Length: 452
Image: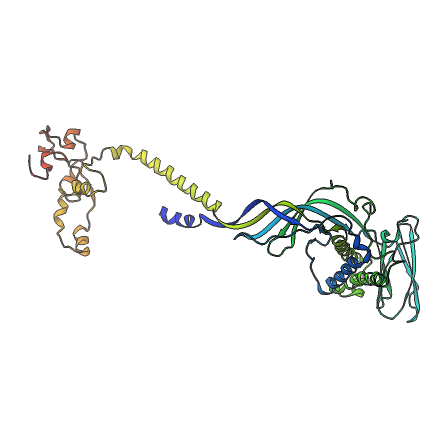
């Protein structure tokens, strides 16, 4: 019964799980170091970031390599190829990162001359943080959008590339304008970045501190103030740079406008007040992170020590089954121990001439039993069962032979004889009860060679 009860627990003792394997001191080559890239003046990085933002809004793209959660730009490094048989292998690299924040807020007030004729200009005015911005937009009969710097404001005297900006959206269906003001900021961090060896994507970023060496991002000329990415000083630039500046403005504003597509379009989003606020925050933050990834890092490589982590299948003991199995075995052991002491006296009265379970032990306790005469060599199972049917068996306290009901020895009184008589010692010739000489495993009567 115990075996049947414990078999399910024994079958559930072992299980498998993914165990983490850590390989330290793995050299990794970084390809970027914190610093302002001098090629930013070509506006190619800004134009590329605006294009990716528009593509991501239309095609629902994920973050590119070394961009994390749409706001973190990680200094790039070479992700090694998988080196083990484990799954989910990652490389853990100490590096630097820049967190970009759009800092968007709704306008304090918005007004415009609505219901103007198609082809006429609408005059739009918005206020925010003590600043008033007024501009005109042509009413084409369709939705409109755009982005402008918050200029000519006493509370924000920064140069044009660092000014706060406003995004405006117009719904022709609702004849409604919504304005969102954003003031970007960046934070520089020492971090530990984890990248997948299979996909190369950044999977986690752990902040360490902001004790970075001197650089021209937190120091001069930027002094920790990021580019707004949509307003540039291109007065003396060539035709291509000016074209990129215009492309950036239309691309970023267009990405914000198309960000409403998953929610039913501009009219559906603008049904509620400030419906574009979260969309503007998310799209503009990703754009700023893309700019940071390309603009605030230089192409300088170094070798750093990192750690490799992977997960491999390991055999383990299932805790619940193991505890239950151990408790059951402990219970059985306690019960068996108690049973052992309870029946200790009864077992002490049993005298065996040979070790139990051996052939010699069986012969010494059954060869002179009277019921054995009922058995014949060559009997089959049915014949043996018929010959022994109705009998019960026990050990005679006189001869220490196995006897069956109906045998004389088995029916003798249970009063114990003296020890020398029970053992049938050679010196014992005294009679017991009926006057017979006691027989036992060691008595002359029990000698197998018939010698007395």
